[in-house]
Length: 206
Image 1 (cartoon, rainbow, N blue to C red):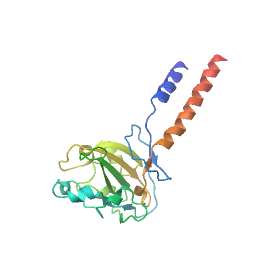
Image 2 (cartoon, rainbow, N blue to C red):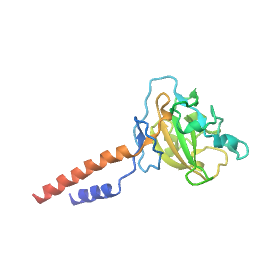
Image 3 (cartoon, one colour):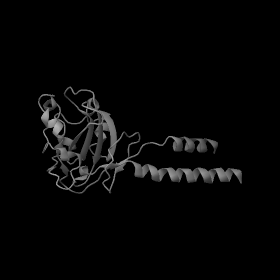
Image 4 (cartoon, rainbow, N blue to C red):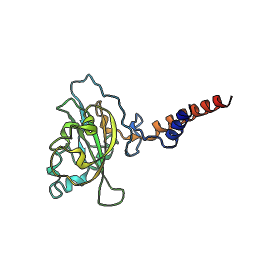
């Protein structure tokens, strides 16, 4: 019993960061995940449609920075890639050749504090040599979750530079147009754990 209480206290004081796609399309940016959601994506649709875009930053340096040796060219280079579902957005969509998930990638750019680059597309058509198909990276193809990777972990070929990228994978029509709400899941878990601790504590006293 004491071990259980100690575990719950530890979990409460240091909860895992869990995040999933929000149905309210909040404008919070994705952050690193220490616990991967284990649910498998399922869809009966034969064709998966995803938004396909990259921030203008990538287009401006497409050849100069060597992005042509890492990425496949998206449907459009546009600043609307940050929020494809915003009013007036011009982000196109594409049908995925493979029956895999849509992905959203947010890279911490090395051009200034807080600068971020946005990449959206099909799991099978973002990288020139494709995603690494092993481990956590490989799970992005069929499972819906978010995680922070180094660019070198993601790709299966080429010579990318070290760069931190938040990647979210999802299944559903244009699901990679939403942003991520990281606070809602965490705030619902903590009250439940706290209530459980109180019940256990009271049972020990009385």
